[in-house]
Length: 617
Image 1 (cartoon, rainbow, N blue to C red):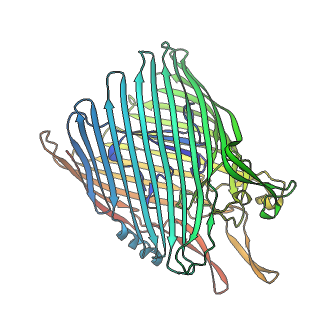
Image 2 (cartoon, rainbow, N blue to C red):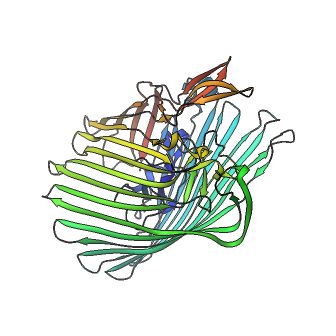
Image 3 (spheres, one colour):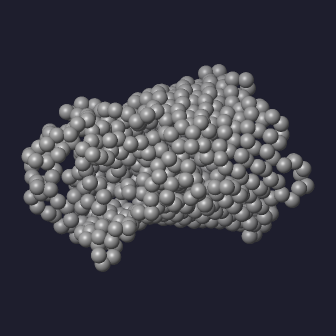
């Protein structure tokens, strides 16, 4: 809905995941064999969620088989996965273990770019989940997660990034009206990028962010009319903004080791789902959040009446241990649902969200070089308001679901970057970014059929997203202060997911996706100024890369369905990008023979066939 990637909160058993993808976004970072539920909130976000402006993706793993040992997985030409469910105490305690790995280097040989053909890429992820039903009133869940990605482009630069997560959750039933959840979690993300191909320019770039979170959530059911939830939470952030160090004795790279950042985000909330009558129900919620920037920290002060640049630094303030700057404010949540007959409803919602952590990036997808920045005296928190209204209707005894939802969102203190900004290992990052205000609006259509021989869904979204700088200084003004498309402005998006069951053993699946190409800023001309060659660029995001289209096909053949079989197996033959369309992964420009030439890099621009044997027992 027009938001940037950092505005989406991704939770894995209550632990935050900072990079949710493997292999350039080709794979999700989560093994589907161990997932119990995946729930996304885009509007009508309950008050117990906070910290991001756009959405919440809440992923919960299975509790595991408490009666007998079971396993599932798959062996394929691209990846192998395995999930084990082991009862440690029958009917009470179970341990679930899962892992995936890839041997995908051969896939890169299909990329038309010769530099990518000589590259390597691999990943793996591991999940361990312990569920213990202590008694009728108490249960305990412990989850550990680790993922690692490593790839090297053209035998030059090696990229390595990791997600780490550990969560502990205790559920307690006080009585038939009060239920509580006490949880703590750790989340970490780091990357290490190094190059040693040229000894003189060899470098080692590191970045790390860790967070510790504690939450206490309660549900109270005083009567059939009210469902009240309330609680408190606290998140402690520790960010190592990045170090750039020479790699080897011959390297001439100048060392940079930025100062550590720390912060504490706390919140208290209450929400009430009120059933006014058989047709009308409302949800009213209030969340009050606070962020404290914590020292020791060195903050640069800038001259009044001048833009923030290195040359306008007039002083430095040194803060000792403890909080030195605070932001806080209310977050309102309200939604209404009105039933129209037995098969239709109208929903209206309003959210106000606050976000105290920012991702610094000039790409549209999460990449290994993205860094996260905490709010401080020079970087204010993001604040957003979203309004939404939707109509939902089911047909044929709920066999077909349809919906249409429109939304409008305004936001402020969004960070965009100056032209030519350096975002990597920069200790005065506030001089490279400018605060902007944003507005986004759109409408989403969905038709879903999940029963019968033919099932699936089709969705269409019309969405616009714009930004505008709010600075009095020309050096900090983009497009003369007028609204311009954000990096995530893609007006049209269509997705089709279809399945056809020929019989109980054979089915075919088809996925199709189309979206408008994202905005881009292009160099239009070059000129000489003071005996130096300069480039003249278009207005910010004035042009677009080519539209995106991809068609995937899968054929699934299952074994017989005898109940007394020890193991059940199936085969899946899939083709990714069936039409071989060379969708633009990135667009870049190179000076060649006195001319500036543009090039398009396509990752997986050819059909990619895979064969997988799936099993469970």
